[in-house]
Length: 96
Image (cartoon, rainbow, N blue to C red):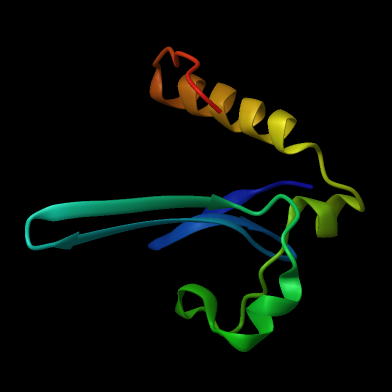
């Protein structure tokens, strides 16, 4: 399964739906940011909201796409490895 970006919409998408999201908000000079990568959440909760304002795009997870999900440790390591490669940085391990 291939993941991709959509022009002018933040997040990671697959042909079956949105797999990940990022968000930034600045309030009173303070920046808040977040990152979500859906490994194995209970997707039924997303039926109650319109995530990211995308009413026609379902939320998916690695578990729903692959039939099983990697461990959270494996998912974290893969995301960190790809982040470091894309942004050309070296990540130093800290507390989990």
